[in-house]
Image 1 (cartoon, rainbow, N blue to C red):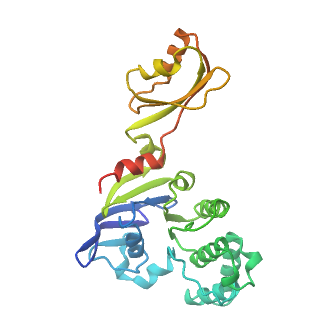
Image 2: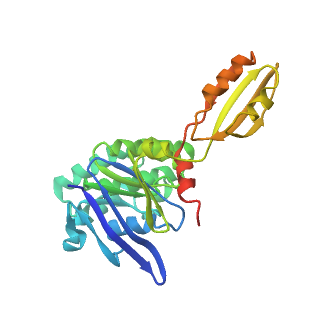
Image 3: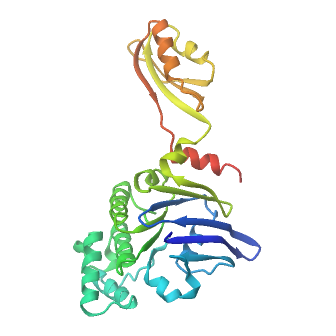
Length: 310
């Protein structure tokens, strides 16, 4: 039984179809990266899962039970960090988490234990008695995550949790999400595509309101079509010209050449691996080969491929 199921879910805003018959399932223990261009329907889908919006058609199920059958119980099982992370800047972090725990109907010793666990998991001890408005953006995101996990939800929905953070803060939040994913099912939306390869076990791409790709991250990335870049550094005669003459090579860009070495980037069809051919060419021409490296396919490649059409 899947934890979360969307069955032909559609959401309209006037004449605009934001989500168009989207169907998907999320199993327990998965960390799902949810990607798409601006306006593709990511945030709308996540807001329907969190019951901020109701679908116009189709239904969303938690453990095979429609959210609409018992929305209050469903809210008890879902944690949500929206993209804008609404916080009360005048509250102390301690006051805010206590307030959110009360809203989650946590009382007495249960509330105290829940707050302690959330504070420890998100490492906000150093700002616990500080006004939220005086916290850095990174700590504000941690506080948002803390409120989302207070009630130990089965499903954690995170919409752009690293938006606006500097590289160090992104790394900290990424590690935190990775740790949270060990205990919970996570659906994560982000514009920072490399984060998906570091954090997620599965990838969903939505485009024009429809699910365009769904599967394990590495398997989908490996299917990315198009061009590949191979970095070559060698010394010898006619390196650039000989590489450009190989079948399947569309372009050769020369970079800095020094001490008799020529450094180039070869652009070729991804469908064939050119490295053995380049190696044999270097042997025949008696080149000294210093580098032969092909860039790995990435989430960016797949994303561009699937969302290229407006």
